[in-house]
Image (cartoon, rainbow, N blue to C red):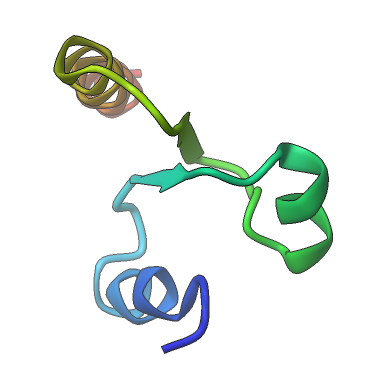
Amino acid sequence: MERGQVRDAVRARFPKIDCVFMTGHADEVLAPRGILREQVELLHKPFTVEALVRRIRGVLDEAQRRRRA
């Protein structure tokens, strides 16, 4: 699958789902390919387990905040 196709397939079924992408590429490489969109979190490699947990927790907390608004 091409980059973003999995995300697009999941979002077709669950339109409000948030995504966290992990990459070793710079933002300048990803932006022209359409990878950096609204509600897409990007975690740059290498990262620690703690960084991954913080990012996921942040995404979940933001989703909960949006549902309450």
